[in-house]
Length: 101
Image 1 (cartoon, rainbow, N blue to C red):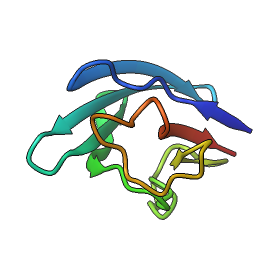
Image 2: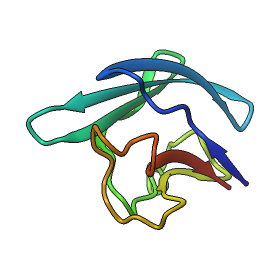
Image 3: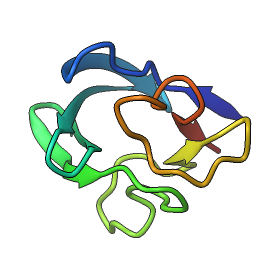
Image 4: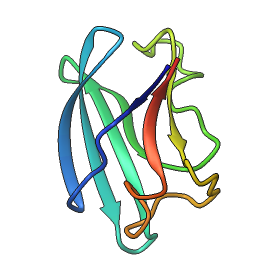
């Protein structure tokens, strides 16, 4: 199953999302200097991912022992098969953050 996580509309944006029947707070932060997006994911006011750069080919949280998402992972997806990392121009257009299970 693929669940699209809402993309940011601003350089810093916070969302509440539900994954595997758990509530999380996701913060997107854009870094102008590196032209890159970073995420912070927290559950019950505890960071489970902290300022992680979004990069293609990485399964966010999959190798964390205490990661609360057990049946899947967060990753980047491109319907156009782009291998570009998300930047200010393509994130939410050709590159998306998704939950895969």
